[in-house]
Length: 123
Image: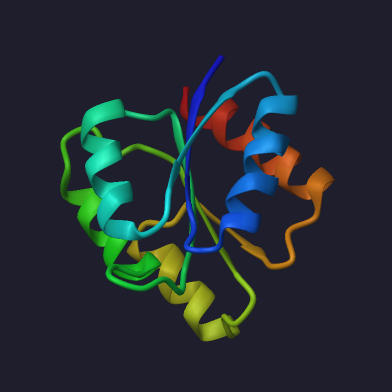
């Protein structure tokens, strides 16, 4: 069982992603913005992070930058989700350290595939 941190400012999205993570047999952890998510990465050391890109206080881009600076964060897989990203932004996020990008609304089957792929590649 992996610990998967879900960082999203929308409660309904966090709840949906938590259900998908739980159905795969993993433990979901939730944070409503990047700042809280970063503290949870430090405290919980999750096996995988799923983060929204657009959030108040600390967005996905700043969140990735800060996670990658942590000793435990340099190899941690990060799946970024967004309904607003353009191709250039997606490329930029991947260059910054995002492992994968998923467009919102996230399809359950696709999310499950990416979770399994990330955990298999980075465990």
